Length: 134
Image (cartoon, rainbow, N blue to C red; front, side):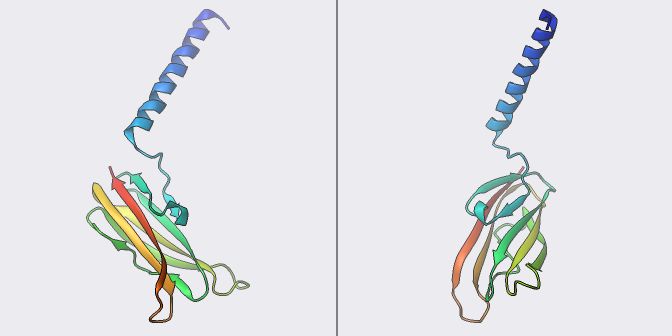
């Protein structure tokens, strides 16, 4: 490798390092738009007009609410909800999927509660996602 190529390679590496450092300092996440129960309690950053999904598992006799609670619907709107059964061989086990859209800049919290389907059952766990729309 001649000196000119070495210099170009070093400049490229330097610029790549600076770009990664600036992205890291900005606090902007790289755009994961699929969230699950492991993300509960986390803050996520999405861009205006992005759509993202939340997928949570449900067991027989228990369910998450079909409509999530959103504290500021001028920032986030729930656009879809669906339930997918795990399959005919696994009765009562499935996945609940919500789709949201970032409709305004700001911050919003999405929450949901999981509990028994029969009336009067207490919620046994909850989910919270803190969303920043930039």
